[in-house]
Amino acid sequence: MSDPNQQTFEDYCEDGRRRALALGNRGPARFNADGKLEEDILEAYRRTGFYVFTGVVDASEIHELETEFDALLENAPVEKGGRTDRHGKPVKYPGYYSLALDEVFKRQSDVSDDEPAVVGLISHPLMMMDSALRVYAHPVILKIVASVNGPDFVPFHESIFHKGAGEGPPTPWHQDGRTHWSENGDALEQPDGSGKTHGFNLSVSWSRCTPENCLWVVPGSHRHWLLANDGEFPSIKKRLPDAVPAMLEPGDCVMVNRSSLHGSFPNKSRERRVTMVLGYHNRASAIGTTTTNIHAFRLPGKVKEVTYDEEYVLKRTRMIPLAIDARRQKYPNEQPYEYRGSYIGNAVWDEETRAEISREGDEYWQRDITL
Ligand SMILES: O=C(O)CCC(=O)C(=O)O
Image 1 (tube, rainbow, N blue to C red):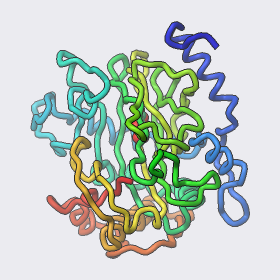
Image 2 (image 1 turned 180 degrees about the vertical axis):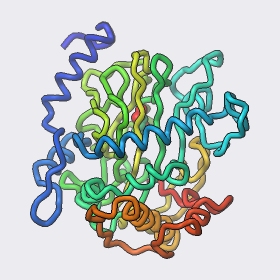
Image 3 (image 1 turned 30 degrees about the vertical axis):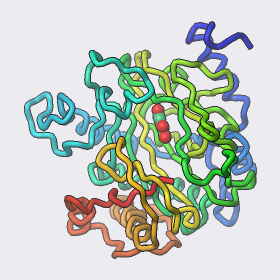
Image 4 (image 1 turned 120 degrees about the vertical axis):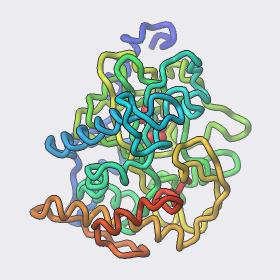
């Protein structure tokens, strides 16, 4: 293959599309008689470090996600730290919007100070969008989660990436997992999925994700940590020869091992990209682990040292049965997912629990679980 950094971006995208389609890691979610993902899907996920599930969320649910998200966007602050939107109305969730100028996007991506303050990320959508809470308990998604993390899986964190048409900020190349590596950077997660893991990000899409605007992943990169031995991540200005685009249609999802090297280029295309990350861990990888948490803040960008004790994890896990109950109320004819893990608190979704999970200073996300 020619040097990708000498190719046009169009050619690089086209090559990437071809490489992606040859990997054998995309298609509808298929389950065996025990309700577990078919072995060939698990094998492809473990081999490549990601899997694209097509046609998971139906069009009416996607429409609700899009509508609620667009209302949040309309209500975004006009400037960093601002409290009013462009219509002069108060921002309902101040402090939860990352603008392209924020440190989180500036860190590695060379966003210049004179770029417009466009919304790149909204953190913690489960308390802002009922549609987000409901899709968090989508039975197909939770069966996928249980197949990889076991039936007593626990949460990680949630956020919505928004790459506006022609103005979407890049996401630097990175591996999210920071904890469960050996000293020389080998993954503690074994090739068969056993051992301590960093979990996965599952992005639900309500836009077309094309090679020009989507997330790119380097297949097989989840086995080794680039930051070991004073290593570093490549700049997102670099087109990696092995990287492939995770192309999605509205309603598709991509599950990406958090140890995989991934990132996205600035969105200069005519189509916006909107994907909501839902993350989950296996319980044994979370409880008792000491690490640096970067997610339990209104916005990413801060850090704190933590040990995840059982109470911390069980309190956060309550969001799973609460979401299942919220979904059951909206879709009474759907077979709800039966969660088999333990948690602290009741599992009834009503106005009281809505107030509880968003109580200032004790919001549910204060117990997000970075690994
Ligand atoms: O969707 C993107 O551009 C970035 C997603 C990401 O970094 C993540 O899921 O960790």
